[in-house]
Image (cartoon, rainbow, N blue to C red; front, top):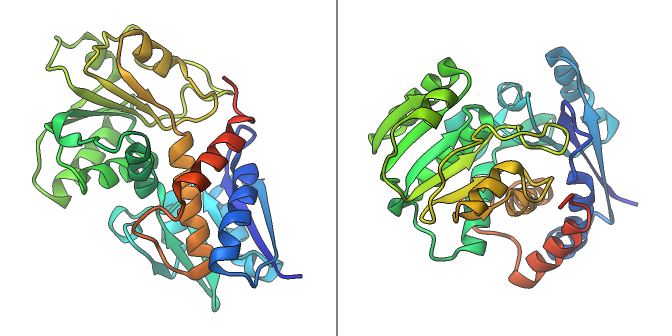
Length: 301
């Protein structure tokens, strides 16, 4: 029996529902794309150090792995250890997906596209050009997200808010280097919370692990939300983080990270099965709804 053997690599993975999701995805995509694989194996593998990650990559093909998803804190290292870089990974120097083919490591980044597809799936008329974009966090997830969003739309302004100002400034320099765009600001969490009220129509994107089921909290606790705001959290478990709860109570539209996870996972499976990246979602509306319903059974509400 031909098995598509996959893994999720990172730290603190107990909250992840990627194995459950990818098994359901495989049942949908395998028949349409690559019927030579009859079964999918997908496991969580926690790696304590960068050297452990590098060793896993080195030995994975001989251990039968076809590829892996990469999460915190190894996305940059995944890019650096790859022989071939596909799509936007070569522009953001980061990868959340690797594939082993012909003694080479191939990598891609499906996070940004997954976010864009998930937003448009739920809000087809969404236009970031009407919003002031605020990123909470300046790590690899934020970098992929801002690149995906701002290469499709140009926001009215961009503010990067982080507990680490050096990381925020580095991300701001990256954004400026890609293309001259809207006005940009870098702020600490405290400065952002105490700044004078600005224009409404803010799209605030929460890109940190704060709020996960095993890391509760809300970096914007007490923030003055407005009904014209749109709050997006990349976290999917719990389904409604403290960040989204406060935003909803303030009248803002909200969206969690479940759709992004589904869309980026579908793009990753396309990459593993074909070696190609799709420029649209591989999932029909009915397929997406089926996955969303199945996936929701595992979430903490």
